Length: 298
Ligand code: GUN
Image (cartoon, rainbow, N blue to C red; front, top):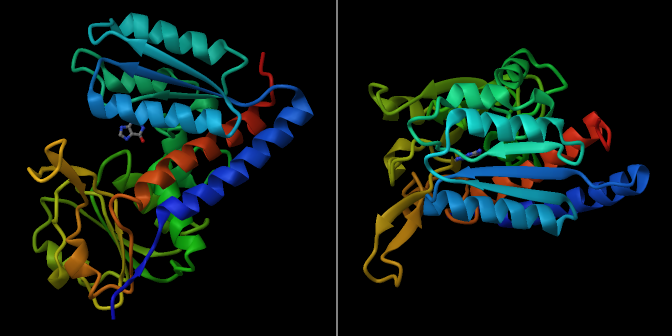
């Protein structure tokens, strides 16, 4: 039987409506809405489009939003100056520096410059550490947080299950494994973390009750790599050439969707799966940050 399709689009809509209500309540209580600032360096078209979607989503839920566009050759000190300004701005509760950054900028220095309480991406080492020790005052990276929410709200039990993650990035793979392993929502699993250099990858993936694929490799996971009845979450967003499309490419995930849906019990599509959840959780993190900081901050 074909797998249930887990719709991130639908759940993201629900979460955005919940955040909108929270924004209204907070604004009523303190007189000002939560604020999200995004910084984009350079003119990478994919990054431009992601940032635009994030800004539009923030405005739709009633947040104050601020977009800072910087030239590709901006110096590290100039970029740090912008971040310092936003750290001190009482109207801004969430700061996001879109990645990737140009090579001349030392990414760790930038991520560490964002105040941890405004770090709605959850990339600051304080938040990374807090996630790993189970500290409650933490901002968790949006994509893994969205996946945990998708699993919980779709009724997928993670407790005691074997979750296998493919991918070890700081944005998805590592924080995802910390959430699955932790004691919180979508946690209490037994976790195996693998990546593209893992020997006999299929031997690991075939043991997964929950398989989370964030490798950035189109159609890496085939039907033979999936245990019958497994839940498969596809984080991949890959552009593959497609001359039948006007724009010359189409977006595909890391999973061979058509084949794997015949084996899995539930699966996320690409697009319309994890992607919309990432933006919904960014809004949720911004609301959480504003509540924790108090509005306005001085
Ligand atoms: N680039 C790709 N994913 C992300 C993300 O979640 N946050 C930021 N800031 N940049 C990204």
